[in-house]
Structures are given as C-alpha cells and as structure tokens.
Length: 135
Image (cartoon, rainbow, N blue to C red; front, side):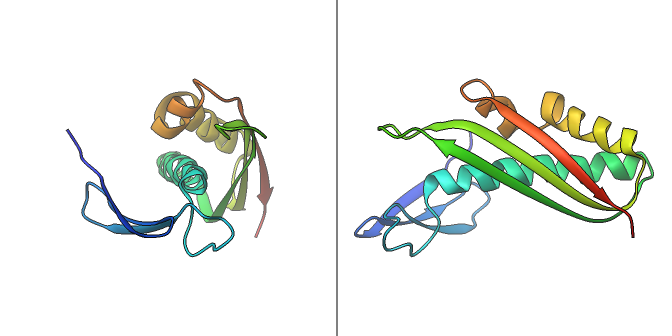
C-alpha cells in the first residue's frame, strides 16, 4: 500500500509528502493563493498522466514529436462539494506527426492507460481535442 502524508502548517496551508518522498505545498485558501489547491492538482495529475502516455505511445509509433503541451480545463459545481462537473483536455503537439498516430495515442491514453482519467471518468465527463503544428 502507498501512503501520502499531509501536515497542516497554518491557516489553510499544508505540506504533503507523496509516497515517492517528494514534498508538495498546498493552499486551500484561493484568496491567499500561496500554493496550488487540491482540486488544481487533480487537473495537473490528469494532464501529466495522459501526457506521459501520449509521449510514450508516439515514440513507440516512431513519430517525431518535438513538443507537447497539455491543457486541462474544468468547470466546478457552484455548491459544495465543488466537484468537477466537466473536464476538457487539449493536446498541443508539434512535430512531423501522422494525424492517425496522434489520434490513436490519445485514445489509448484516454481509454486504456491513464489511471487518473479512468478514476475521474467515473464521476465526470472528460472530452479531448488536439492540435498538430508542423515544424
């Protein structure tokens, strides 16, 4: 079993130690904005998870990826708990890439490999789109 630890450091600020030992600062008070909030980190986790998959899959497909940026946007419920009501992922790729390879890599990530997407998809719809820029 993996364990994360969260230590309160004052006000609505916390220091988390993730199972790998890294430290992450969090601030639940969006007005002070001293660190990312927990719900923001869900967006980051989703983006990093699927980006990792897409990079790996495109490499296996021998696609020449020069850069990848993943934007994850969401809308939250107005009332507590302010859960994510919908999420959108936009992949911005650059390189000599076959569109079918890109589409397939994203679909594999979204439907099979990205564990964060698999968990979130149980409670919130996730849509995606992509943009390919040639060098």
